[in-house]
Image 1 (tube, rainbow, N blue to C red):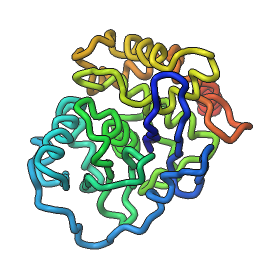
Image 2: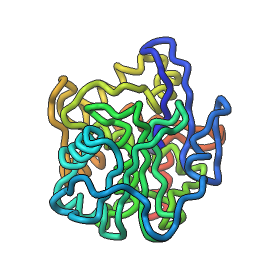
Image 3: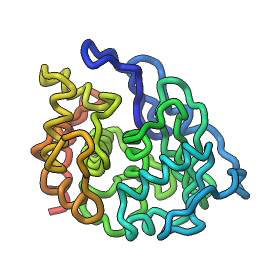
Image 4: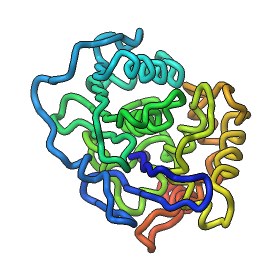
Length: 275
Ligand SMILES: [Zn+2]
């Protein structure tokens, strides 16, 4: 889930929703959870014709949108994932990406595969941008679900379900923080995110400016937060998250419920459990 509100860069008033179907938690009553839990067509995909094909995944990714939207979304996949990673995105089933009107506060949503066949991502047409942070974020949730090269606690989702992203409340901060940092790592070409999203919570907790935290994390994870700079992909991106997560600002993310732990403390706990 990528929460979105039209947030000014100061005096932020978040419109925040959280992922996964059975935990519709929201601090303001709006909730992308309904998008996650809505019924989807099963059986034959009713998506439009395949517009263009990413080399490594020929025939397994469908994008339904205008030619311009499709071009931007495909560019994001190509810019931000290696050929091997692209292949992994569809190893366990086809991926259908659909540009469609979502509620205003919802930029994009990862649907998983409720029909047991096709994974789906929906993107709000109003939130498609050149840096595509929203779409990229959902792709990373998907990659965390399906890519077998992701072995560590930090890099794999802890979803209890293999078809949809179903996260225990105590794991939500970790899932979103790890996804967020990896989004910053991969953004290519980099431009400042349009939305503060989960950084809002960290900024509030630390009493700092959201965009300072984002810039610091981008520099930490990708070496540069300059406009137009290139991010990382492949093993480089995954290793960078692994190496830097605990130093990142976003690792302090703490989402409700109140009795849960910040992302990095939860990670520590899980590492100890694993031994
Ligand atoms: Zn998310």
